Length: 216
Length: 250
Image 1 (cartoon, each protein chain N blue to C red):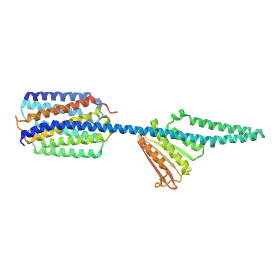
Image 2: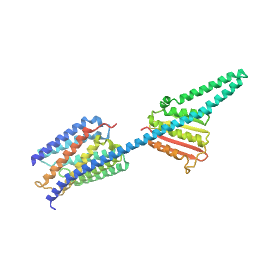
Image 3: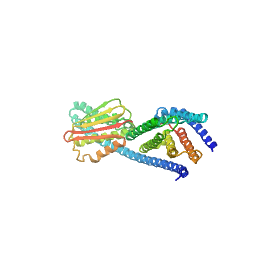
Image 4: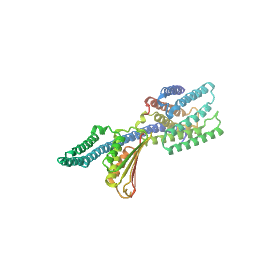
């Protein structure tokens, strides 16, 4: 079983790197849009995942601190991104409220949870839930506009599809894991699903980069 | 339910729900896209129909103007020349006047022929078309008309120009036929973002509650909407009527 999970992890690292490189190659196409900081987030993911893996394997100590910090920037960036691209003022305000809620939960975890040894589960769940909510608002705004005609070639659409599918699938797994977690139980099934979700998400990102066209 | 069952249920439910979400998501987007394409197709048909109607109406108006001008202007000059020529039989010194009158007639004829040349008409810009119309009103003494152009003239797509001109022509025609106005002021205001047109007369005006202008006004509004512009007609009884049209370039 461990071997399968190891293969998955290596595939993930390769995908993180490929998507990051592709985001740099395609940068001239989207450098003047709200997505201009996207390579930074992919780099952050690559660095956080590599460090997480390194600490876990070499020092065999908890790597929560890396992920706890990483998620803060990750979620905040995507909330900001969706807030920027949505044109409906009402939806923008909803996202602003969402950002404040996420930050409040994060602050609460920062004070009451051990950042080095425990995962910020609650703020993560809130962040993921709010991200799904932002993506739904983004979809509604697209459906109400003529953007829907050229959506196939829109990078953000594919990124949102990847994120949407990943968090819809991963949120229940995270909740189940926060309820009870035991080594050597049936959890490996969920782990395989989780790892497959990451692959699906990154394949969506890849599709987005390969199909994207410059907006006229 | 023990943890094993929960995990197995989750393991089955998650992939199934994801597949359902993907299907729903893509079918919703595909349906919306198809509907929007259909709507665009229909909007294009409406636009083409209105454009064709506008062109026909402009042509009809032009023919009416030619007939008017031939009868009231050139016709009158020719009648005068005929009378002068008859008189010149007895007073040969009057031949100079006959020649002058015929000369004026020829000039008027030339101006008219230039005005109705289809090639020249096609290449006219909105500004040129409106100023020719204003010149004609003044030449034929229909109304004292004045055109003011502010800002630098921006190019407008040919079909849009036709519709804009037809809206203005309809307004001018209403002013001349019904308003009993003595002056007509037209202002074309060009800015980076939009062209704002105002046209106002000092005629009898109309009460907004009356369905004055009826279909004509409705047509003007529908056409304005087709080219993404806004049209407002304000009128006060005894004071006159004003048209405000705003056409956004972007």
